[in-house]
Image 1 (cartoon, rainbow, N blue to C red):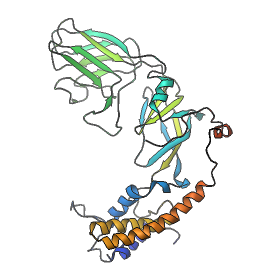
Image 2 (cartoon, helix red, strand yellow):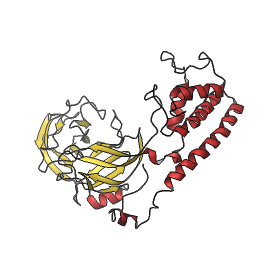
Image 3 (cartoon, one colour):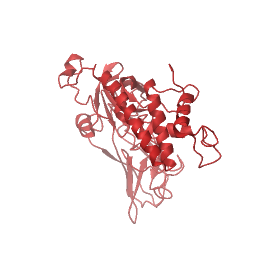
Image 4 (cartoon, rainbow, N blue to C red):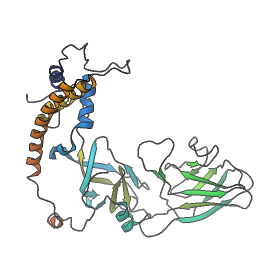
Length: 355
């Protein structure tokens, strides 16, 4: 069997589970039935979430590439399809440092390319209204706020507030921050829940212009409206931090650059192309079949079937492990001196495990 297709894996699973009739167990779940489960669901679940990480072979080692945008320092990592990242890492085909420890990264580069701290500008003052208020910051461009979770976060929980606008009212303090897209959110209009973009004010990261800022409480006359922010000097990135499935670049890019590094691909999603799908390494096909069959027996509460599949899985894992170690055994062992042989000496953040 030169190329193992999804159909071959499904056929193997049917034989292992005694489910020859599609009425017993369909190939695919019924989209109109929320509790319907098909064989492809079991395959997808085992292949993506249960397949042991130690079987990542060199065939899964790939180049990961993304492009920068002027003034944007944080970029999401495609954790759905990739895992560990490592050196070498290039920007504009030039070798740069890769850090996985925020303390080391910011200790070397700071939050604004150096050792400086946040600026504080009193850009406006209260006039006994909720606004709108406007003003211009003195030092630009600015580092924008980012979400600690790169997945879309409608409530902006866990946002890293690189920009904070604050003002005192007659009863307390109202705070406003940005969403990373130039919109001001936070304690405005109707409390901390984000409002429609633009309706509570905007901030221009390049020019520092703040406009249309509305608070949900009156700012008394004379009370300062202050912005705390981090100005940066845009330049070619020389270091990258990989943390919380995000890349942070320093210096902040001044134009678009191509960033290249090494990452391990996750095994392709089993349903990405059902007509031509086959495992990254063909010897995985029976492992996937036994793993999916085990999950079927678990749902059927059949302990004998689970035990039988466990025995077969151990045999297949042993074969997979032998292949993986055979590949890794041909690689040079990493030491503190290995970088001298590939011109990477001195890059302390070069290797490490994914977050």
